[in-house]
Length: 154
Image 1 (cartoon, helix red, strand yellow):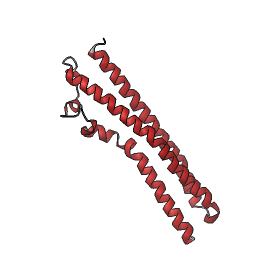
Image 2 (cartoon, rainbow, N blue to C red):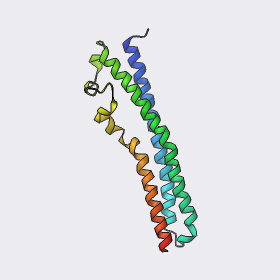
Image 3 (cartoon, rainbow, N blue to C red):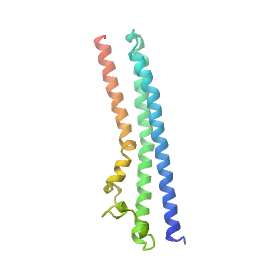
Image 4 (cartoon, rainbow, N blue to C red):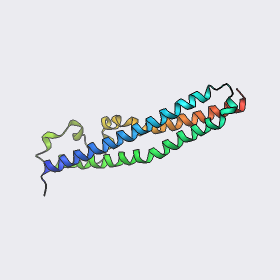
């Protein structure tokens, strides 16, 4: 049976691994979106807008699709991260040997049952949680703008 310290090291390694996965997935999202925003901007400056309407809408659809595709793995990483953090906090709470390693955030009442009570933790993950939706709504706005521009003929 592993000691509490070895178990804590294992949990922290898993938390670190999940944070790395989340960072990679967030980076993929931003990279994909940046490679799509630039062509969308270029297509919007075309002199003959009606001639580039199909590529413009394709860019919007691809932008929305990449957000939706990456949303599931990002949310999965959040859920797994919460699971490992909860296990880590339960171990720290129930082990006298590990109490000295507890952070102030680990001592928030009820935080060992629900990570969402840790406001600092929630703020640190805000971009990865809400960033995909910001990009999705950006593409929705682009679709509306492009439709209005196409219909109005300007």
